[in-house]
Amino acid sequence: MVDRTTSGGKSSRRAAFRKRGLRALNFAAALGLGAALLSGCANAPATSTPLRGTGDLGVIIERAAGRVQIINTTDMTRLATVAGLGDLSHASAVFSRDGRYAYVFGRDGGLTRVDLLEARITHRIIQAGNSIGGAISQDGKVVAAQNYEPGGIKLFDAATLELLAEIPAIGHDGKRSKVVGLADLPGQRMAASLFESGEIWIIDIANPRKPEVTRLDAGKEPYDGLVTPDGRWYLAGLFGEDGLSLVDLWAMSPRAEKVLSGYGRGETRMPVYKMPHLRGWAIAQGQAWLPAVGHNEVLIADTTRAWQESGRIATAGQPVFVMARPDGRQVWVNFAFPNNDTVQVIDTATRQIVRTLKPCHGVLHMEFVPKGEAVWLSCRDEDRVEVYDTATFKRIATLPADNPSGIFFTARANRFGM
Image (cartoon, rainbow, N blue to C red):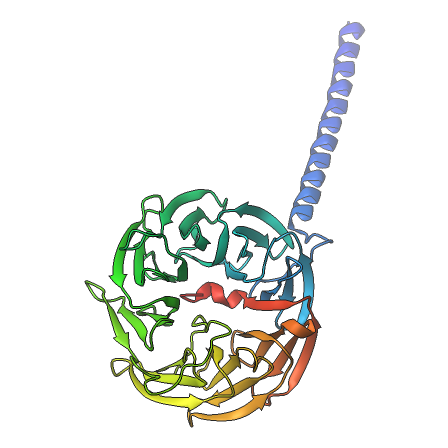
């Protein structure tokens, strides 16, 4: 005889088990589909910000407005503007090693970290009373600011702008000095010049919280400095005397030596309306191409022969920037007032001026695209930026900009001293 009550109970339990199993399978499938959708969303590009690389990006300083433009050098277009950067009347910028972030140093002592991909400020601090530039370390982890007031160098964490160390610029005379010519060097070091005290400092930042300083006598009033592309030589221009101060950074015991001394001997020095700049890396054909202070000349020094003078070229005015095209075949020169509407191009093979351009009034800065086929010029007094083909010398683009000054491209991230 069959117990129907027991058999029916087992059937009911089996049916309930099957239902629970189906529900579990359906839930698992739903979870899998949800995970797939989430994974797809994570990998999909944001619709509001198109994906792009950083290698053809750059910034244009809009000095009066306290803004930077983010531009694309390949398309020669403006991508975005970022405001709120303070006084940019003598601003400069360096870049993170991946080219994503620009660190902008303002005249008001502001240091601002700008995300070039998201077009926004990530961090901003006021770190001094008057600052004119800075540098980023070889490993990209430390940002350094050079300051006029109160005078000195400050080291910051590149990711957070946390202050790591402060180095007061106290010269051998016991007085504070303006700091100029700050540049990154191989071996986690930096170099800088002290204007009033006439010194060059080599700063070891292997431990950025405890930097070590080597002090060298440089000469009278070093006003700017450059590092050669191989990172071997640091060269400081001297405002208070005719000549430059040179340091061999490979030497076991570095010292500063005078080169091009007395280049203006017998000539009357002209009033200097704008300090020359050495940060353009005008090293080409084994020669350094340098602005003469208070003279209408570009000086040429042979880097392979103890930096002896090997020539000079008469120019249309007092040079401010003397910048070499990346391949070294051309050197482009702009000038101080009253010749700041002029740009001249020197062929380094013949040492001849091959073109004189009149692009606009107030040409303040020049920047070559990474491989040198074009150069961008800031036209401060005419509120625009001009782009020229360096082979044909033809204008190929014009971009509106509010009182532009410095132009800086992310290719600088991979060069010493930039």
